[in-house]
Amino acid sequence: MNKDIATPIRTKEILNKYGFSFKKSLGQNFLVDPNILKKITEFAELTDQSGAIEIGPGIGALTEHLARASKKVVAFEIDQRLLPILDDTLSPYGNVKIIHQDVLKADVSEMIQEEFQQVKDLMVVANLPYYVTTPIIMKLLEERLPIRGIVVMLQKEVADRISAKPGTKDYGSLSIAIQYYTKAEAVMIVPKTVFMPQPNVDSAVIRLTKREQPAAQVTNEEFFFSVTRAAFAQRRKTILNNLTSQLPDGKEKKQQIIDILEEVNIEPSRRGETLSIQEFADLSNELYPLFK
Ligand code: SAM
Image (cartoon, rainbow, N blue to C red; front, side, top):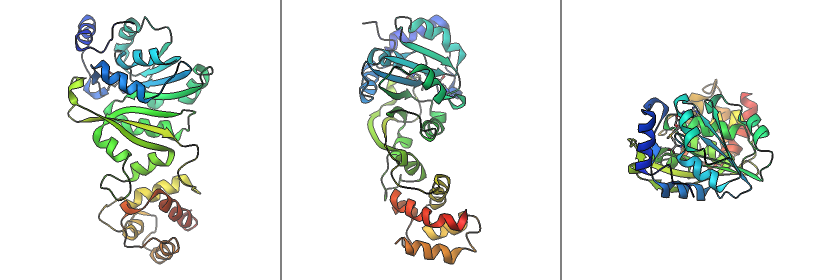
């Protein structure tokens, strides 16, 4: 097996060879611990028939583990300066393709059709750039890509919010948005010391397993998500107060909103954080005709 890219010594050698300086604005905190990379790769449960999509390969630390564990890897990297480095570090692996593009602007669905015809399943695996973790995850889920799931490293605080259950302080519209599409688990907490340079915050790995069907039946998804966002606009307010102040003409429709809350057995004095995804679905399905 080839020597790991991600030991601190080899990473420093590579960075020195190319005179590479980290760009904080691109969330560049590289992993320098092969054991953590091995674990992240194991959480993805790849086989030699799997495809892997990576976002932000950096100098290839995680990419090479994915290349060893899967049939093919395609990685999106925004920073042009990393391309010649990746060409060099990943040269032992014939099953890796790097695409120089901002993943948020990429047509990932088209890429999958072009690159992954021959795989049995597809996972997204990444150590995400922390300045755009939520937009990246939401893009991957909202585009309903044919993926089995997502295993990513991100800020621990965001991992806690994503995997939070109703009734907890971390539960909010982000938990619902992600758990609507996936089963979300925080699977590992990662210390700052395994990064170069070290980030200011603690990190965690989450595993999102795509549901065959969304967690609840919703008449209009856009409206469902706007109801969940409205319900958490001010956490200390009741669901009734948040809905009347956030939904269009909510104040004038207050009595109808109260009637609908009662119809779906939700006390108007409850707080948004106590409602399950199913309750939000029931509520938004009943409210929808009033606001469409
Ligand atoms: N995978 C490497 C590792 O674990 O050491 C690097 C991870 S580093 C946290 C994030 C990487 O994402 C950097 O290489 C950065 O240049 C890249 N990146 C940042 N924003 C991006 C974007 N919008 N699209 C694609 N790559 C991006």
